[in-house]
Length: 190
Image (cartoon, rainbow, N blue to C red; front, side, top):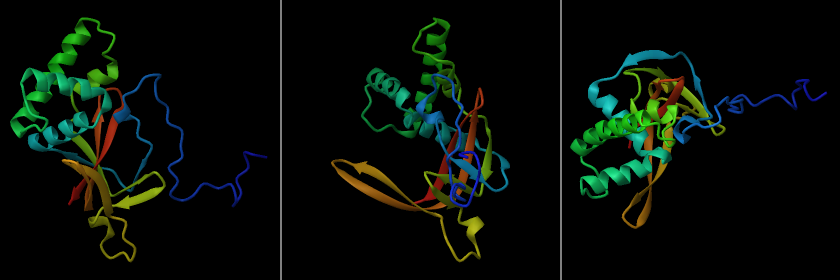
């Protein structure tokens, strides 16, 4: 009886409850539980956009944090990186992970190696995304609609105080990595 769908057991329209098939070890950044809405449009990103995407993903991956600390100690850098240091970190990280992989270091997985080489320059852009039971749509896709789901809020830190940043969703990008790994990013105006 449990496998019979009724109006009481039917999944919600904006449910993001689906099976995620991941290997026994996967990086936290690749373990997203959302789904895209609408037609996927391929798009080539510029070199600057690619570097921004790549550094953002690296900076927000828990497994990369020790490498960031190592890099900052090597270059005697402060906790905030300049744009030049970000570019250098991307190259340093790729070289470091590749070297460790060639040495058969057990701390380097195929997922970390895929992350180190960065996303494909051809990304996918979509108009909407469902995650954590919430639906988000880009400003462009909501023109003329009565209901708006393009607002976002992100918690951040500035010194000792926690701040909330409010923004408007401009674009939803899915960056593809080696080995069917991907990361979904929201591009916002804050």
